[in-house]
Amino acid sequence: MNTEFLIEAVGYLGSLLVLVSMLMTSVVKLRIINMIGSIIFTIYALIIKSYPTAFMNFCLVLINLRFLWKLKRMGKEYEIVESDHNDNLLIHLLDHYKADIDKCFPGLQYSLDKDDTVYVVLCEEKPVGFMLGYRDGDTLLLELDYSIPEYRDNTIGEFLYRNIAKKGVKRAVYKGPADNHMPYLNHMGFVKTDEGYVKEL
Image (cartoon, rainbow, N blue to C red; front, top):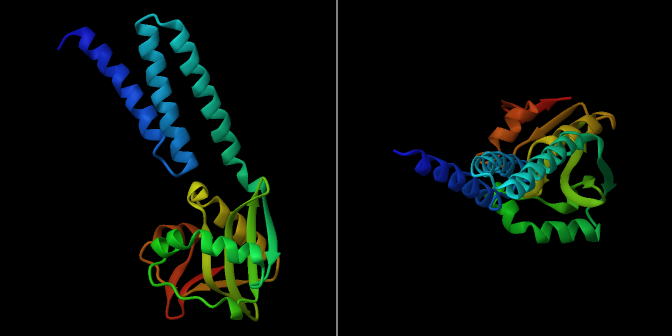
């Protein structure tokens, strides 16, 4: 295997990773994979002495680092808005993301009419997640806890549960379909009990 072939392989690998990153729905995964591809392509460009290409890809690495740093701080940039089940924006969001909700929670049945606790999470004024449920004393019975695909990295959940604890909720209980939801429930600290999945706040 000659050196020229290895150098070309490095270039193709960098290009492939940058292309693959464009297929990611998660903003975090997109940025990480794109950054790795840009680092590899920067090295390749330096080896072949294509300095403008190296400079451009080095700048892409810095841009990705900046966005990843910003995303890491997102908990401070979220806003929580209390809503209700008659809110037209909520109804629109549920309809707009219906296919993805059905994919994440196959077989989920919920009734907006009985939901007396509705939170919409905004990031830079954009709706990025919402929670539906109803209160039983200091327990919140969750019907839906959903984040849009681009923000599905658990930060919205962490933000939500910190904030609902400040509103007098001491326990959250989820009884819906969990097959596709288990990694999130585990990360959030839910424990399976006879009641369903329970999180003590």
